Image (cartoon, rainbow, N blue to C red; front, side, top):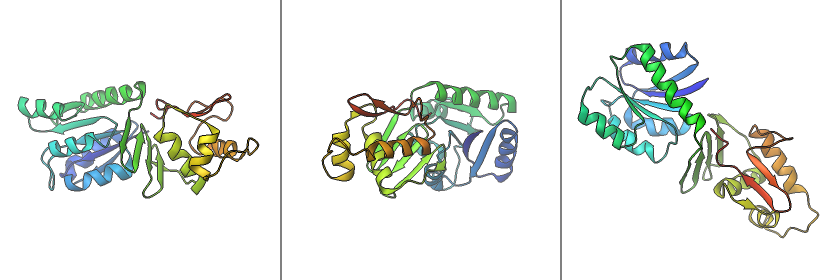
Length: 233
């Protein structure tokens, strides 16, 4: 099921859209205020954000611009404003689509599905903001030591979190055991200690990776470990 945050201040419209999409494998979470939407999206980590333009607190176009640097998924404007200027501005600010509220429900559903399919097919971009990292549906906050995958909280030990942070902040790069021992444990690798291998196995299990044929965190023979950035959609 896809998770969608709908930012819409009209409760009747929010209920109508949420009910319709809910019948088609989409879990819709309605946020009525634009100025609360950034925190809501960060907390929920949805697959797609659906924005009205006329919102209390912060308008949808400003919200789209703010979200684009923090949210890797599709942003779709859903508005009653049939204006070429607004449509062009929304797309330039980072929106993936602009849909009028007068569009038939089946058309809305089809266009949202197109966006969700494209996300699934595309490599996950890496978004880094200081103490936060996002790779597709994997979200890591170093300040709060929070990890979410697909919107679900992943509970990690201190060592496992530090290990994941090192791997994710160097996604696409091979990190040697020697480097990981220094960065995570603060000591040299003695050539015999297998605790890093055990920690990698725990991470794979908690992050939904295969133990037999891992695709998200790979072991590179005689070199180290690699977190693959394109496997988190």
